[in-house]
Image (cartoon, rainbow, N blue to C red; front, side, top):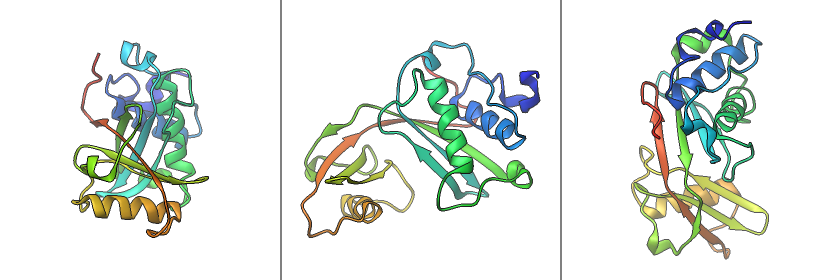
Length: 183
């Protein structure tokens, strides 16, 4: 089976184009294509893959710590999960592929912080209380204040605002379709 079966995205250097190529191949029940031969994909990093259909969220799954030996496999894993295992949505079907767009957020390691150290435009947030954990990526449309960001993350985790919780922050490098991988 040739990698060109994934269409024009299989050989693209950009992480979002690679994620889209993975989704195309996986929906067609073929394996994910190998990542481009670029040092960017050889490093270890956590990432999120976000799928949108006509600009609306269609799937978003990621990791906070690397789960694969390299970023290429991390992107492929999370593209698969975003397309087929986001519990908020049914699996992506072939009839949706043309309307889908992908983005990839590559995460920095997280660091402990205080709420005063957050900025929803610059930092993603992780809140936790015991085993419950909620995450929100940075720079999301409609999330303009730290209170909104933390509130959404707490709600996702099932943590009441009156409960004690820990806060961590992280930065992302966001890649949209057509963006090139950096070195």
